[in-house]
Amino acid sequence: MEKITKLTSQTIVLPIDDVDTDQIVPARFLTTTEREGIGVSLFADWRFDKAGNAIEDFPLNAPEAQGRKILVAGRNFGCGSSREHAPWAIYDFGIRAVISCEIADIFRNNSLNNGLLPVVVDSDTHQWLLDNPGAEVTVDLEACEVRLPNGRNTSFRVEPFARHCIMEGIDQMGFLLQNRDNIEAFERNRSWNPSLNVPA
Image (cartoon, rainbow, N blue to C red; front, side):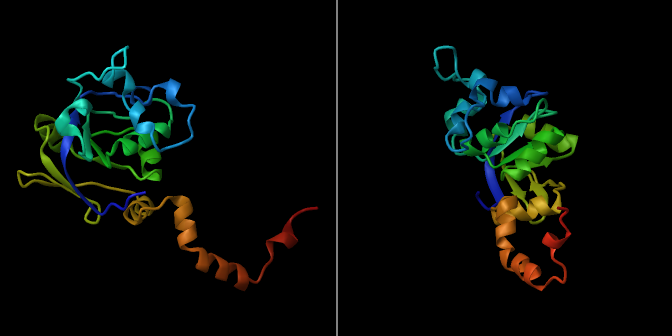
């Protein structure tokens, strides 16, 4: 996963409320367990017509949207069933942060576990972002602050452990491996043996 400490990008704006995980990644794409390449299925039913042709006026298909790393979404983004494929697809598409005034809890947790930064801002900041598509925005994870080109700075909250992992570019397993020496030292030096306390 990519380390994120400070992210500056023009935005892609998707001004639709209540976007659920089945709209983010339709169910027919859930057979894969591979994260790489799943970005092609992102908003598949909105990005492509029935013949597989790109729908030109969909925000993510705009030529100027390519390479942008911040998605500004409508209210209640990521609602619906738990689906890790949703943040996988957004991340694989190249987006590293999703900003809204309301992000569904399960989607937010899945995003944090997979290197995608969900950012919840106040309604006024959110509305400004919706009204100004393509604005260059900085998401500063060190300061937990969103900086707008009009001079407004808005704070946001991230659970400390998730913040550490995203800044280090690691997942939960990566965190354990990062602390392997400390874990092994603890196991060597503890005064009790868990194997002796296991019932027969």
